[in-house]
Image 1: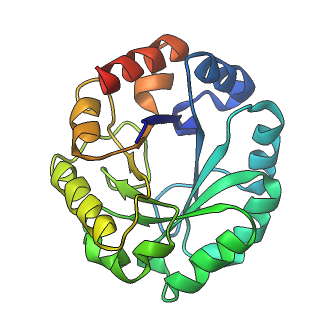
Image 2: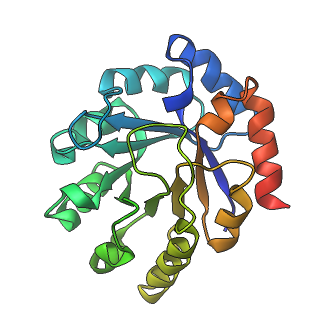
Length: 219
């Protein structure tokens, strides 16, 4: 399965999002990762559907919208309407995960489940066959620029095995601390969609940084 790079605009310059997104796309971004935080589920507040709608007007790559919010069911329709191509929701806040995944897919959007570092892979065992992708957090969610949690590498392998048992080849997305020092191990373990924020937008040259990540991931 090919590797896709998803630069996270959480680390971009919010005063110049169109410029930074264009630079990331010039460097080979496959997706644009959008972190939505509500200040409840995670200790930070970012953006909502109006900003996603604005990003959709300038981005040429699909929008990968990660809902780090305490009540995702309430906002799924709004983010789909705003232009999300992928929506991922945290298993930690959803008592009816199967219903939420089905609701996202019914909107014509790819549906993913997100697991925090302390959440076991078995949390998605019963819905593994229904997921379009799985997102594993390799840092505790809420802020960019954190250090990659090494135990994530084994967790990726265990998630790949769980998906295989369910007959699924769904991609595994990895988010947090992905950079030139970690990306090769993430890919070797089975990560397919790689989210990078600070490593891209904190570099001073997003296009060159993404090209370097691609080379490190595939060599």
